[in-house]
Length: 166
Image 1 (cartoon, helix red, strand yellow):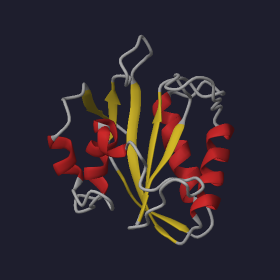
Image 2 (tube, one colour):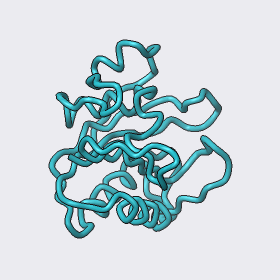
Image 3 (tube, helix red, strand yellow):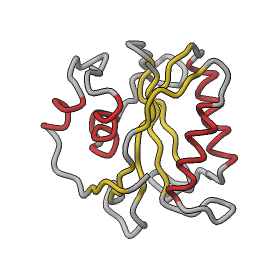
């Protein structure tokens, strides 16, 4: 099981809404060789984390199956972000698209391993990842912590989130 989180809070380069950009990015990721899209979460409107004056995000998680080399998959995901206008400036900046590899099965890649670090080093701290992750993989357990997304959510403060039409 491959879990990839997606999000956007700026229009795409063609003026697409963040939700439309996310739908197009899901299609682009699912078209990568060797992968099959198995499920897509609901879309959620979420406040920026950390709190800022940025527009709200559209966030979700996709679950895929197949075989992929982690570094190769990361390179493909970053290329998709760039295709949708993502530029990297400062941490937590607003973005037209954000794709994060959350987990690839039970694979653990920790520093000093090369990117990607798996599971994602902050996924367990982010309600905007864990809530949609529950939609697509309710039985998933964090490979290092051994906890489900629901159990991880119990330790987090509430986040301003609302399910939206996808």
